Length: 337
Image (cartoon, rainbow, N blue to C red; front, side):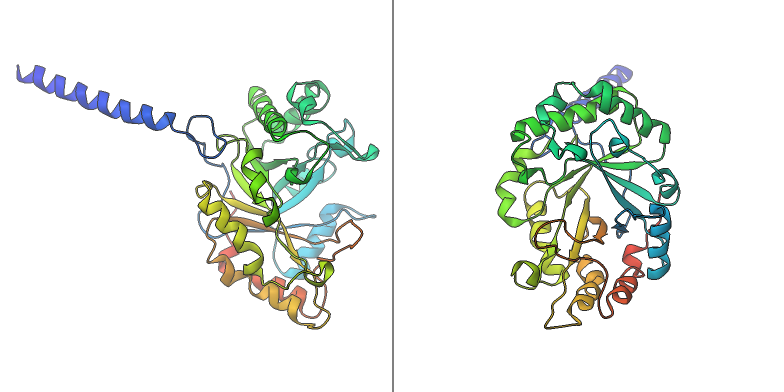
């Protein structure tokens, strides 16, 4: 009888534990989630954040040589390098194109995959991606390339989608995002962290949740904060003031368990205060300590391609030195996987 009682008690414990696990597994993953707990990203530093950059491809020479030149100037290697790709069946649409595999030998690659054909200045409707029309010519070949590459990469699909007007509705974007994600999974691609990226501009906050594919589909949250300053007749903001409002929004709106990558950031110069730009970069380490879910940040070292042409390059009195000093802070010196 005692053995029977012990057996019954053990069975009850197993049923209770199994019930708890089942109930938890059925809970929603958060905004836009369907069901099931989200899988954690394969990447992310255990503490602090990774330090990265977007460097425009040079007209002559290789991107790798340009990147190593920047690294010599700032006195450290970049952890993440950001590159852009369209969805044409050409070299522009080739993930891991040119010398990207060599760049990725010592760095993590963040590949932005835009639903466009650059040579035609044409947006690809999200519905066309979701219905599988591009699987054979675009999605599957790139999935196989990424699988063959083997190293962990980050892929962001059609970032800043909330500003687009010709690609479709939010539901179309979600369907396209999920289709790409699921197609990679079906083809056995296991080395991708998926990045969901919005502008981060406060005027678009009301749209973000509508475009979110769900926690089980997004490993990272990303946004692109800029201190536009005089370039757009905007009030000057420090690094912390530039990043924190959107950071706080994500923490309060169901995304607090997701790591954040600042996919693009930078500041314009203030012609009335020559040292303002360098001061902005000197504020990075102290500000990051107040935003622990930021696990990676990438300087956008270029000029915006629009009528105003805001210049976020690391130029100006003391700017490169200030950026280099910030990049040597312990918070952004974390081991790569």
